[in-house]
Image (cartoon, rainbow, N blue to C red; front, top):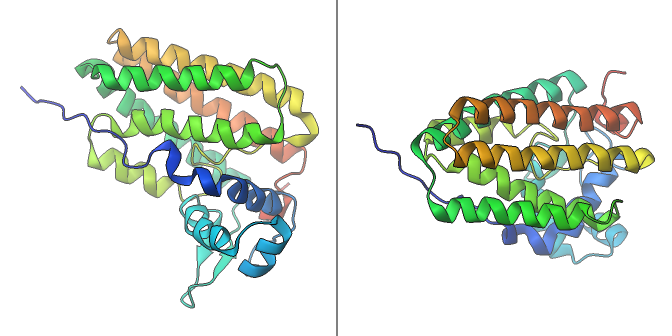
Length: 248
């Protein structure tokens, strides 16, 4: 009988915490057009605009490149990447399918107790963020960290290198990574509603995994991807993604 090897995700929630304000700041500059597609990222100028140490800006750029927001040139400089809205939403669907496979494997083989505890901690963290019934700027950082941890546990849990590699490759497209939360700031109440619904899906996903319901876990994770698409489309409709050169 094939035995599953469950592993903890290699990147924890605290790994980028000190850079989080810088990461959110640069994402916002891209979203609002302050950094245009193809534009070189100038570290010292960014540090001055963000009021952040130059070192934090420099160390944030590879993280944003992993998210697909930036591309590194042969000169080791970074430029803003451009993608169409269709490429982004297609990649989100691919993420849902891959996570669905991981979730099914977790449910069918039974996750260890430490993983269930970690997933429930994500639920508590998300509940705390959403309990005040409105969103503030810092929520973008905190929810992104929680969301990254939740999805990382699902993806890394079965210990499948094929799934992990495929997810990492797919996440190089902007706004596909679970940590790359994009608020539609013109309609924060609607954004809060969508995030609350998506977080309720987190609860349902955990319950399905705990009960060994593999097919249900897979279906819920695929549906969860559609909610991510809805948030991206909301940001797109309010023209907050115009700087990415999207086709309107």
